[in-house]
Length: 109
Image 1 (cartoon, one colour):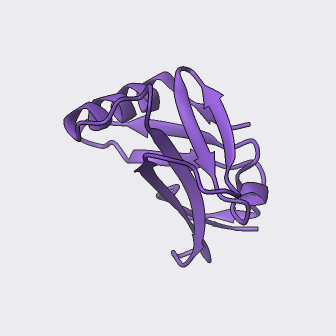
Image 2: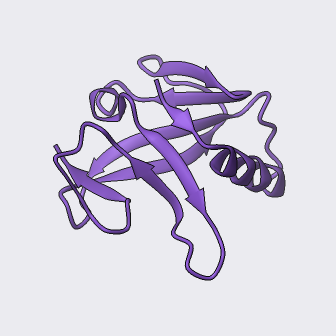
Image 3: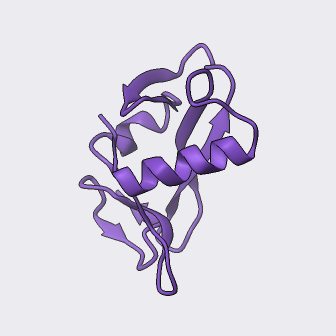
């Protein structure tokens, strides 16, 4: 399960609207790739359709995709959003991470 804070949900919906996407028919794709200051970094993007091996979730009116390789790293994460002058933008809270960077965008397991 992935948890998305209300602030993150509202920001994602706003970005989707700006990009001409509908949260009813589009997906938010979560992923993990090699890189970042802690070894692995998070990916967040939009997609119009799932791939065959994607896991599909629904949370707070959102359609979420996670590829099979990223899935074990993302179980139980929370996506947060902080705006304003000192805000971080989107950042992740991952209970599975052994080490995270200060920005909340990379981790090691």
